[in-house]
Length: 147
Image (cartoon, rainbow, N blue to C red; front, side):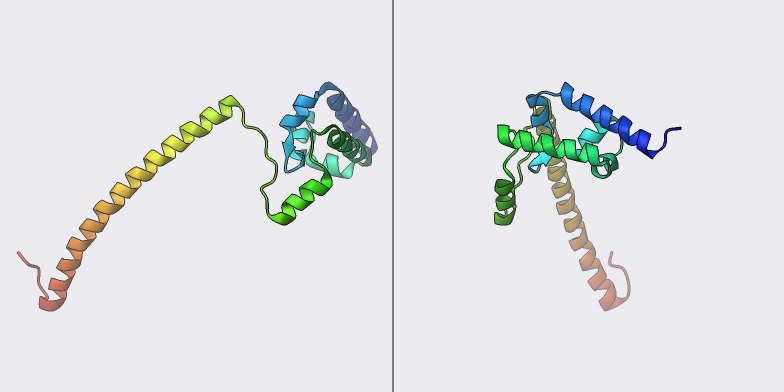
């Protein structure tokens, strides 16, 4: 079994190979809230997110890559993203692909249909409740059921 230093070296080699194999378009797909998604990077590299934060060489390489991507224009400048957060603007999100859009449209249609069904059921239950409210009043006044 590898000790911590060997594991750190192995993670660094995996990360640098992963960086070299990605194009600018690949990095655009990983942009979340103005920086690269650590969760997705860790998943693609096959190690835990903590390796990105705790391994100093991986952390420095990731920081350097993000700086380079900011210079190229793939990531927004740090000042821009901080100002946007301060102004309350929505953070930069990933562009949803055609498959994602189709999924969202289908999901929206299904939710709207369910919402309409629940509203109809709610109306029906309210009408029944009104009928039972009258029965409750009669029982309260007379103590027996009406015919």
